[in-house]
Image 1 (cartoon, rainbow, N blue to C red):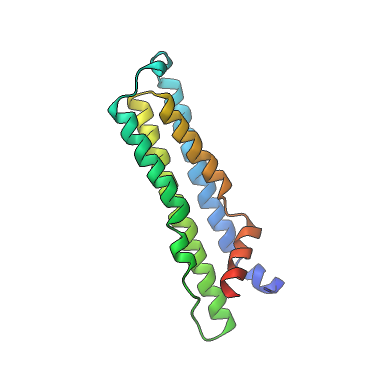
Image 2: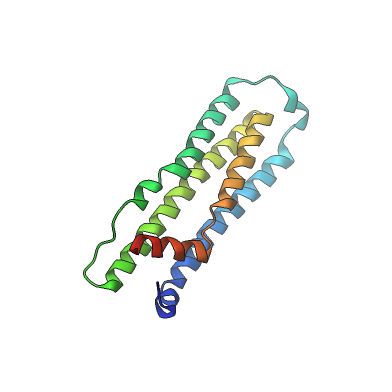
Length: 154
């Protein structure tokens, strides 16, 4: 549906979005590595206290919101008089959708990393792993991004 010229025109925006997502993932990995080196791993089997429970509930809600909430933006119709304005509108809406999605998942990830630093528990590790997997699964690959733009226009 989109011509190669149109795909080439918004390719820098895709690269910028991928860079932002990559930086967020690398930052989370570096923080997790630092916390892993300072954590007292002997406390891992302790009973579940209130802090990991709150972090887990918050993490699940934010990861779920990161998957579901940006779909609200997906329902928006594209605006503009010309084909170019419609494409730019769709690209902008999808970029915002990805950024909102990553901000929500990153909030869950960093909150649980802080909980992990304060109170080490296996449930918190599970939420951190889940957030990382969801983060990787929802990465804005070029084909997914272009497919979203075409779906929005069609």
